[in-house]
Amino acid sequence: MALTDTASERRVHYRNGLRGWLDEVQRMGELLHVNGASWDVEMGAVTHMLTEKSGGTAPAILFDEVPGYPKGFRTLYGHFSSIRRVALTLGLPLKYERKVDIVQRYHARMQNLKTLPPRFVNDGPILQNVIEGDKVDVLKFPVPRHHELDTARFIGTADCVMTKDPDDGWFNLGAYRAQVYDGKTVGCQITEGKHGRIHRDKYFERGQPMKVVILCGQDPLLFMLASSPLPEISELDIAGGLRGEPIDVVRGPYTGFPIPADCEIALEGETVPGQVRPEGPFGEWMGYYSDDTVPRPYVNVKTILYRNDPILCCAPQHKPVDETGLLKGIAGAAQIWRALEACGVPEVLGVWNHEAGPATRFTVVQIKQRYPGHARQALHVAASCQGGAYAGKWTVVVDEDIDAGELDQVLWAMCTRFDPVGDIDLIQKAWASKRDPLFLPGNFNNRILIDACIPYDMKLKNKFPPVVDVSGDLRAKLRAKFPHIFPPM
Image (cartoon, rainbow, N blue to C red; front, side, top):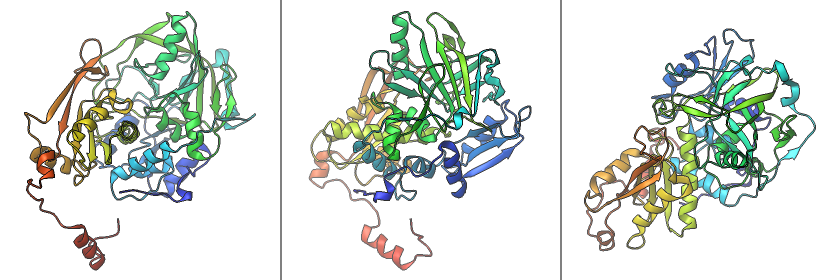
C-alpha cells in the first residue's frame, strides 16, 4: 500500500533539541517524572521493570532529585519505547495502520532526502557552562551504574560519539558506550567495522591521537541517526535534511568539532595509541552481560560543556523488550528496505525487525511474489546488506497477506507455509557481535534464512488451500456499521 505525506508531515517539527522533544512527549502523555531514584542501579531497574512487558507503551522517564546531586541535574531513560515517539522524532505521522507503515515512510523520506550541512553559530545553550583543565570531572553529573552486575558507571549509553575521518574530513556520529574510570577518563567501546572504529584505526595506524566529542545529552534525532546503519554521510547533515534547516553548531573549544548548540552535555577529549584500560562488563543489547571485557582505548577528557540544569541521556540495554529495540529495529528495517529496492527486488510491502530479537536478530520481509526465486532473492539481500549484515540471526520472508510486523501472523506462516527440508538457507562466517553469547572465533556467526512464502508454483497454479479470513470489503462495511465496536485506527 503506497503512503503519501502532506507537505507539513515532511519535517521534524519540534525545536530546542531535547527540551523541545520532551515538551512534545509531555503533551502526548508519554513522559513520566520520577524523583528520588538513586544513580546506583535504581534508575536502570525502574526502566527495565516499566519496559519489559509494556507492549510498546512504556513512557519516557525523566529522573530528578537524584540523591547526592543538585536538583535539576537529571537523567532521561526510555526515549524510544513507543512507535509514536519514534515517529515524533523523525517528523512522521503519529497515526498508522501497520507498524511497517512507519518503516515505509522513513524509508521513503530517506530515499528523497536532501542533506543540509550544519550551520556554525557563535553562541548556544551548550556554552552556558565550560569546564577545562584540573576542574574537569564527568562525575559532576549523576552518571548511573545501570545494572546490578555492572562494575562501573557508564556516562555514554544514549550518546553520540563524534569522530572525524582523517582523509576526507567528514564527521561521524556513533552510539558507542562510554565507561567512567575517573573524573577525567572515560572508555569508548567501538565494534570493528563501525565508522568511528575505522576513523580511529586510521589515526592509530599513523601513530596519531584522535580527537573525539561525546554528546551525552542531545536531540533524540541525532541519537537515533547515530544508532542507525547509514552510509558515509555525516548524521548532522542528515538531521538537517530531516528538519528542513541546518543544525546550529558551535566550535568545540578543544577539538574545533561542530557541537550542536542546543546539546545538554558534551565531553571533548582525545584517545591516544597504546593507552588502554580494561573495558566492561556491561548489560548489553542482546540481553546478556557482555563477556568481552578486554583492554580498549580510552578518552582523556579535556573539556566539559553543559547547559544549565543538564539532562544526561541514558539507554541501558537489558533483556528484550527494551527501550532501544524499536530505535534499532526501525532504523535497520528502513535500510534493509532501501537495499532491497536498490538491488531490484520488486513488490516489497513491509520490513520489520521484531523487538524481542533486538536490532536485526529477527527480520521479516513481506513481498508479493512475482517470479520463481523472488523470495530467496529477498532473503539473501536482506541478510547481507548494510542494514542487516551486522549480528543478524533469523531472516524470514512472507507473502503479501502476512503482516511483517505482527509476530503471530509470521509464526503462522512459518508453521504452515514452510518445509524444513527445502525452505532453509544458511549463511556461515557472517559479521557478528561479541555481545552475542554464541559468537564464533574471529567474531563470526552463522544465520538462518526462512522462506515462509507459499511455494511459487502452487501459488501460480492456485493449488494452495484458501485462507479462512474476512474480506476487506466486509471488514470496511462492519467497521462503518459498528463504530462503537471497531474504533477508528
